[in-house]
Image 1: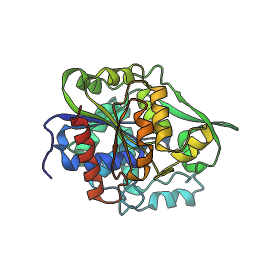
Image 2: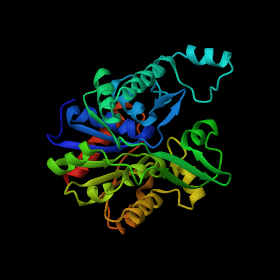
Image 3: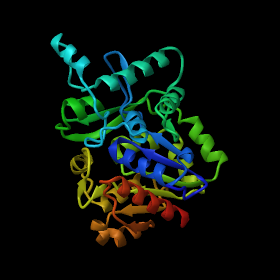
Length: 322
């Protein structure tokens, strides 16, 4: 598809929903001008390797290598290494395929050789044919801990091993106070005019909050002259993927587009300019506008490649309104 904007775009992403919209954006604009700031607070060590689930989901998606049915992992994956580990009595609760395992081996070797996560991620994207710039939110380690009645669980233990079953009471981002925001993104915000800053339809609590809570980052985004557009991850009272709706219920946040808007406006006042909701939630537009946001009602469910591109085009058009 032809480019629709000569300016760069910054998208904040985590999880499958974020990756879907970044793919749409790469289809409707010059993909080399697409910058994706990705959550790394769910990164963890497994089998002695550094695993970066959100980074890999975005990279695999943009590279055309992802498993489109499940939204994460690689297409045509095999699991011979995991079967061998199971035969030896190893822990196999986190399903790593053979090609995916190669990514983690390569990444871990590069990190051990003295390269930081920013450079390693850039090189990974280039090697897999991705033209967009993929930015880890920080080169410093940040870990999401899910607060439950039985204590704190590392995010992947909660999400994968426990299948999101424990009731959530809150979240803690270990290391966030010492972590430095990605300097390349800060330089992008300082030095270049942007067409849009887009908050993808990702889980507010475990995908976007870790990014925005990096010291000084959300206020830097707020002070930017570029419009900030958020695409709501809740559609007709449901999360299309992942545990966002369950988390909202347990935290006492209304599971609606209005509830999402209230959460962001309360936690990050003045950050958002535009709020994009699905047509099924059109009746909530007036209430959201009362919070000072400009609301766009459009189909936001991304089932096909065309859906992704259409939503991306709409979001860019919304940002162009200022």
